Structures are given as structure tokens and as C-alpha cells.
Image (tube, rainbow, N blue to C red):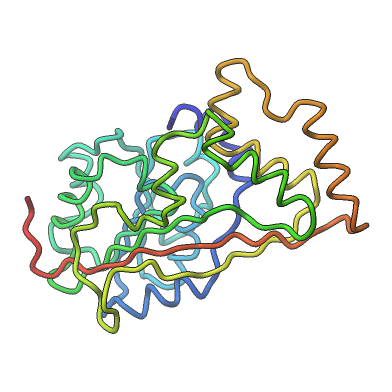
Amino acid sequence: MAELFGKQARRYANGRPSYPPELFQFIASKTPSHDLAWDAGTGSGQAARSLAEIYGNVVATDVSPEQLELAPKLPNVRYELTSPAVSRSELQKVSAESSVDLVTVAMALHWFDRPNFYRQVKHLLKKPHGVIATWGYTMPRVTGPVDSIYEEFYSMDLNPYWSPTHKLVIDEYRDMEFPFEPVDGMEDTGPVRFVAERAMGLDEFLTFVRSTSPYLKAKEEGVELLGGDAVERYERAWSEEGEEEKVVKFPVFLKIGKVGNASMD
């Protein structure tokens, strides 16, 4: 799947929403210090940009050179290209053992080799209060009849190009293994919910749709999920309320935990 996102890097960067400031403020409130954050699977750096406003330094890693090329170049953000598994030498480039305040993964953990990644997180996080925060968003909501059209696209039952990992997103990572302790002030590791909002015209919304994994997978197989008939349906639904721009709401869910005294195994 990394290859698909790499080939469509600019579309991905343009089509994806920014995450709400409240999300980063909440996460930062759970880390005692704000010296260093590792943003794994940074893509085109949407989360890294916000983290850089709070943490002294950010290391942002991804497997796609095309995505990293489009990421914002900031003085306190260092980008590293890694292999999907992140080798020992690549992990050493991120930081030293027990030196990272925060590890973040935005809309990507369901693609990871999680047992291996969790071992790396436990190696790098400061003990015992270093924090891992991972989030994603479920089906975006648009006022009016656009929702019902997008629901057909979003449904795993109706769209065979969704990866089985998408069910983890639909379930807000509830059933995903997450071997970390609740952060201070929480009884469990979430999900905690936020909302990202973005004003979009129809062309921008369709750019978002074309940046999603099922659209890209279908395209690779020679199937166009946004053919003329589909676009016409969106056009009719979009214009029904007479507004060129609509506020699209992306429900964001957050899983968050601290390393504590968890075993490396």
C-alpha cells in the first residue's frame, strides 16, 4: 500500500484534512516534557507540522520518498526515509534508547507490523511516562445527500477494494492490540474523540476520495470508482443545497498510552 500512496503523493497531500489543534494539545498535556517526538508514518507531514509547534524537535519517518518530498521543511523537523520494517540502524537514526517523549502515528498504524513497531516504541520512549498516541478518522460527514453517496463508497460490504485492515479504523482501533498503560487522568487507552473540519468544494472533496486506499487500489487494477456516472451523482447531490463549499467533518479517534514498565517482548 505504501507504493500506492507514493505514486499519488501530491493528491494525498492535497486531499487529506489537517488534524484539530485540540488533538495535539490533549496529547501534549500527557507528556511531562516536550523535547523530542517521533512521528512514524508521517506521509506528507500533516502531523509533524503541528508537533513542531509544541516539541523542541521532531523526527518524522516514512517509507515513501515521494511523500517526504512534499512534507513541510521546518527547522526543528528532521525527515528520515526508512524501510517498512525499520531496521536497527534506521531506528538508531531516529534517536537513542529511552530518549523520546512522544511517538505518534496518524492514520497509519493499521498498516504497520505492529508487534515489531511496539518493540521499537518501547525501546525509544522515556520510561515510565513516555507516550504513544495514534489516531485516525472514520467516515467524513457532509450535510445533505452527499453522505448517502459516500456511504456506499465507504462501506466494506459494497466496496471490495477496502483492505481488511480498514475494519480496524471503522472500529476506532478498539480491538487492536495496544500493549501500553493508560496515561494519567484516563482509565483506559481510549478512544478519545475529536473532530477535524475542512471547508471543501466538490473538486476538493473528490480529490480526498481519490486519495483513499480503495480508490488507489482499484485504479491499480484498472477500475475507475469515480467514473462519469459517479461524478454526476456527486454533482447533483452537492448542488442540491446551492452551496459551492461545504464544511466536511472528519470524526477523529485517538488511542493513547504510556510505556510504563511494559516488557519489551
